[in-house]
Image 1 (tube, helix red, strand yellow):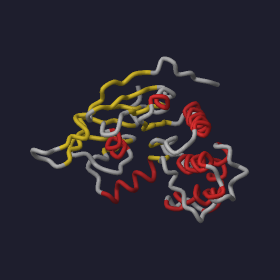
Image 2 (cartoon, one colour):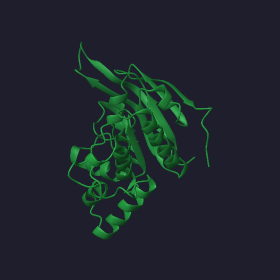
Image 3 (spheres, helix red, strand yellow):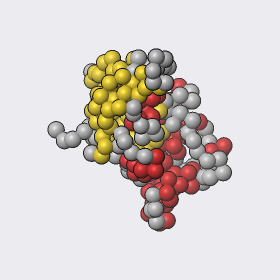
Image 4 (cartoon, helix red, strand yellow):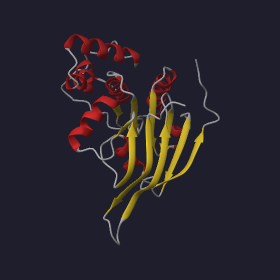
Length: 235
């Protein structure tokens, strides 16, 4: 088997070291390979948000190693981590994080500017990714002219435009009604079918059950790591 895209070895995150310490992550090991669709599920306080911050290179562990796409990122400084985040990870957040005075197209283009991609290529990638999420008719609309589900689709387009190796979705349906949630999950499943590597962070069993593999986290440890037998690889 090829090297894991994400490999976490003996990862710990400790807050307030000493007698009142909190072990948000407690000796976690995990491997995720290219093309996997993994849900990481846990209740509030389980350590899943801390784990998301580690996987997304938004924070560094107290101890242990994290290899992302073959590179040890666990001891990197902030500047280096921001470069890794920009190149290796596409983020989808619960709150969309769109810029209000920019159109859908401009929102998707923005991270590509930071990557130094020329204007013509940038426009082409942004248009392609908006088409993939079914928003070709909404490219010139600003966030306040779109529904929550449409805004989240713009956020997905922004995450995939630069074709990063890993897509990290943090509670991507958390702010949406049930119909929009279903739409977003269908888009994510479609991305998995086209070969994207997806890591979905959620507290919702119903959302987690739609992933190919489910990792449960509790008290900072991985409680179970199972393949979803009911997962359907639709054409």
